[in-house]
Amino acid sequence: MRRYLVATLILLSVNTARADTIDTEMLLEASVDCIDCVDWKPVGVCVWMTCYLWNCEFDYSIRFKNYVPDFVVTSYSNEETPFEEMQEVVDSSNEMFGFAAGFATTPGKHVDHLRFKKAEVWGNPGVAIYEELHDSSEEMICKSGITTYKPYYIWTADYIGWHMNIPDMFNPKSYTGAHDMGTTTVKFGNVYPRCGWSIHPEDPKAAALSAQRAGYIVTNPDDNTRVRLEPETDCGDKCWPAEEIVENDMTTHKWQMLVPKYQTKGEIFGTKSGWSNFKYDTDEQYAWLLWRPYSCCSREGAVLIFSIDLTEGEASSFDDEDFDDLMETDGSDFGNSGSGSMM
Image (cartoon, rainbow, N blue to C red; front, top):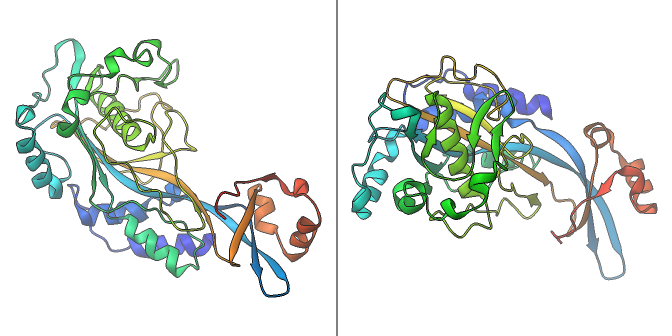
């Protein structure tokens, strides 16, 4: 199955002209170009039950996990968003919230490294590819419920939060450093306060920090203090949806840079020294795909009664004999019992 997925993604990316700006064509290519980002693997077993008039039968299917490129996240300084096809939406938002219209920092001119970055989070049109792969692979590749082109976050709609730093200026997290992104030697900054302002000598890192903040605002399900659209969690009736992204934790997300440097590998911010090298943009425009992990299993019965988490090796070699042993035990020999909330 892994070979099938890799071959399919390679075929989808062949003979596609790479654009210099962010548009639908580039996003579709990027969504299949980063095989490292997908990270498809078996992670457990789902146990199904089908009941008839006189008896019930049990069956199983392998539970898989892969990342999906849910969002396009832009971070920039001037008046035009790097996602050119969404410029009209941004202009409409500027007009609607007229007090913020036309606000822009001048690229290259920063006092004491104080920088302001605008940010938006859009539904990636590339998620449609993973819906097709999900259907054509008998549900062995997970999809997401994200809506393509949907504006999940536009900074002007959240002007008070993003530009004026309210209410985060009153949040203790903004002063404790509890959400520092990076390591003791590679500093990107604190995710709090979640605003467009930062003090940083390196512009690419300031842009990355703003992207992380915007991504966190969108994916945090418990945050009702900011103006955003909450991501959909309906990724299928046999799916465990992605959760909020956490800084320094690749198990919750991956970033794939699109501009100014096109990359085909996923990463989290704050792990590499010299990260800003060859990523400076004279117009100070940056954009990434934000990948998030989903877990799913194909239907093999009427009701999913429970799932068990396994190592990749255990899940890959799981067979009928193991299933018989599983049904005769409490599952302790096969790993940890997963969520049964999907019944």
